[in-house]
Image (cartoon, rainbow, N blue to C red; front, side, top):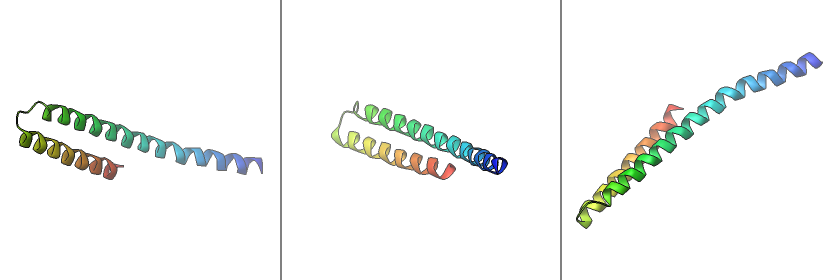
Length: 75
């Protein structure tokens, strides 16, 4: 009985560890996307006209959304 319980516990941990590593990879990818988005917004703020700033921010948001989508599909 003790062997069975020990086997179940070990199997549970063996299956949980790769899942945890995958979620860490997704979190790291999301963090990278967020950093790129913030950098894009910061660069957009340096443009001269309002239209250029708005377009640059919109493009940064599109890239951010695509980056998040790719990060979720990779996991």
